[in-house]
Length: 274
Length: 305
Image 1: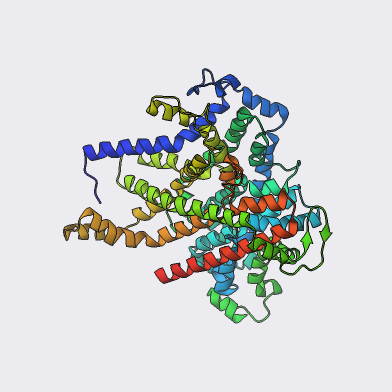
Image 2: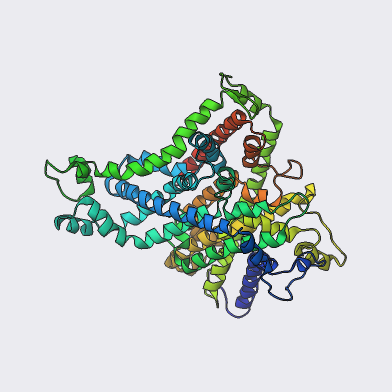
């Protein structure tokens, strides 16, 4: 499958730039709108490049305190990621090393990942009403942790299987307890996998809309829910929608850009090592 | 006990190993299993119970209603229409994303200047929050100040003012374009990684034997990447079956109920009309439908191997 040089390469570069334009233009448009003045946003024909990069749309979000919702997203995604990584890796280690529960247990765990969120969230809502957990941090943290656990177990099982058994044997011979082996030998060896998996659990929780929409009221509103609050009946506050969306998207872009090499294994559920 | 340690291949424990060590493997899976069951099993059983009652916003009628809610679901045309919409999105978006993703993967297979940067930038839509993607495409499709009508105007040479979001003819292409924009890079990334792992020596051997480019693609490359294609289709197929965010951000199921998916309809029934018992029945039927689909899909995967 060798492409010819010269003309072939030129055509491929043209196609590559066309693809780049298609996939990046919407993102450009979103960020660009966030810097526009209201007059420019509602101009006809549309303004393709704002006259000046004014940050008034962001200032409003900070002044009104709406930016708090980005912090909420961070707390929920961060805490649930730490919990899911800790509990999930422990379970993954047990399944990978001891075959705990057999093949059916492992399959049951990954099948939990495949249930549609709306079918999960409806029962959970009924449970949380009874427990008084609606619109609380711990409610959403437990939900995100549970939703991410199957993914973490599935992914970390693959990474743990790559750890050489001799390392653990040596530690046991040296008198380590089994818990010490897990935390002082296994965790450090798989830290690359821990990192890569954590990024995805974080992104899942960070980008989630449905769970947060249903289980928050006013206290733990996350940024995707806040974005939809700006959709009005008659007028949409496009300046705020764009600025809030940009605030919530930029951190993810930075994280993903720095972890490019883990991307393939992460999104393919480990099917492709990448 | 001995089997447990033996399976690990570590060493045989003395008979009086501490309790913690003897139950080590169960201690490790217990917390995770508990959390999954807390959010999975208990609410599931409770929902099953509620689906046989008649709880709405107005009354909390917990008497046994038999299969009344399920019977109602059978004759609820709005539910079956929503299922139809969902399957339309699935039937168009899934093949489109696969084909486009594969073409992109072929495009970036050979070395070219700046290839890594192209790939890194093209995958960005995948990590955008789907609700943000929906909002972004609503900006792009706006009939007056959106750039899409503007570009069409340039091509047509006269002002184009298509009401993308409100017009029944154009709303499906609009949603599908947003969906394909966001998830084609996902297909691309998986297929690109898989293509990179195809055995070069086999390709070269086929080339020496006089196989054309198409023959090599069909007989060497496609069989090699088949497992990845199946995994990618399974992941994306399940995602499309529960489609919610992008449609919600773009149309909220409108105009009318034209683009309502089963996830959106369940949300409307449960959290806007507060028909708790009916929504519970709906959620369970979705789980059943999906389980059937997943089982079939997993069977196919097993056969493929």
